[in-house]
Amino acid sequence: QTLEKQSVKLKDVSTKYERDKRFWIASINELKRKIETMKEEHSQLSKKAHECADSIPELNKMILAVQALVAQCEDLKLKFSKEQAMRKKLHNQIEEAKGNIRVFCRCRPLSKVEASNGHATVVDFSAAKDGDIGILTGSSTKKTFKFDRVYTPKDDQVDVFADASPMVTSVLDGYNVCIFAYGQTGTGKTFTMEGTDKNRGVNYRTLEQLFKIVEERKETSTYSIFVSVLEVYNEQIRDLLATAPTTKRLEIRQASEGFHHVPGLVEAKVENTKEVWDVLQVGNNARAVGSNNVNEHSSRSHCMLCIMVRANNLITGECTKSKLWLVDLAGSERLARTEVQGERLKEAQNINRSLSALGDVISALATKSSHIPYRNSKLTHLLQDSLGGDSKTLMFVQISPSEQDSGETLSSLNFASRVRGVELGPAKKQ
Ligand code: ADP
Ligand code: MG
Image 1 (cartoon, rainbow, N blue to C red):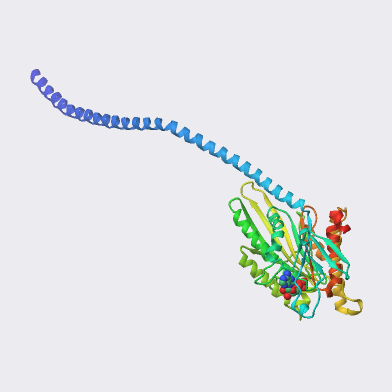
Image 2 (image 1 turned 120 degrees about the vertical axis):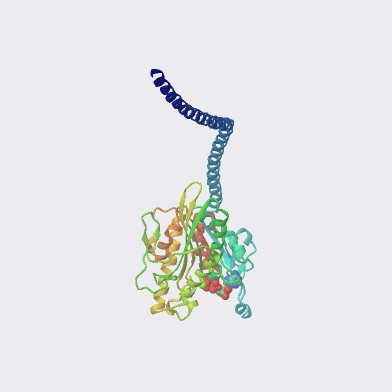
């Protein structure tokens, strides 16, 4: 019986063993498979690890190359700013050597009417190339004047602008500039500054050149250009770009950063020469509004174009702001006392006062006087930022060749000599 019990027990144990054996074999096989997969993964990973290890020197080389490029870039940036500063300095040194105040004299051709009336020419251009101009004051007497340039009636708009253009370039380097035309009515002030559609003048050419340089420098600098057009008539400022008439008086204020401005004045942002031409036309048309005779009105008011440039140097991060004034002055002719009364007398006095103020400011600057009387007229007050300091001034003195005008011609040339001569000493002894 005991034997039988034991036999049964053995059978149970055997059955359990058989069952467990299958389980263990299955488990072992499963584990073996897992080990195989892990071995496979391990070999792949170690292959990758080897590849990575191979790439490390390559990667290090790349990092070094990038560092070298960064250093080179910094170096170039430094060189660039140095070169830019040098270019600016040289350009402006050359400009300074020519003087911060320059006077160019331009004589218009004898008109058809003058020629048919047999008017003689009293201007001697024989030494015009040297900046000398002579005015015949009698059959054998001549008064000579010296200027930075003398343009004969044969010189065209391109010749004239060629000499003014370096000043225009200075504006993009942060300098303030003022260019104006002075002279008797009918001598070509408007022709020089504004020009005609076919013979565009300094105003248009200036903006055209500004846009050209802006395009050339676009990799290194960005610029915004704004234009205002205004008129000063009887010591009052009129905004020629204003779309709606305003009764509010326009006054000159000094901004915190020192710049003078006229609050409320329209500043038109211009992006290309087409927009410039359009803005100039709007200004021109506005001048005619409210006056019976446009030519007469424009000869009694100062027409002023202000170009503001904001420059942002992308490499050095430097920002500059500069201002360029282009001014077509009121006619400088003196009217006989008996001729003028009432409104005309007031106009004449205002013109006289503002032109004298302009002469006084420039000669005070030229003699480096400690007090510069900018506040004596709206004209000089408006121009203040662009007259004096390291700003550059260019005056076109416009004259007529006709003997009929020789009195006014001499008076204009004397005014211009005062402006230029004081600074350059010996020149005024002529
Ligand atoms: P202002 O503005 O000084 O009164 P304008 O510019 O109106 O004078 O010129 C008077 C006239 O003489 C205009 O018909 C103008 O076209 C002409 N004129 C002036 N300068 C020249 C010049 N350099 N060449 C040709 N025509 C000129
Ligand atoms: Mg004019």
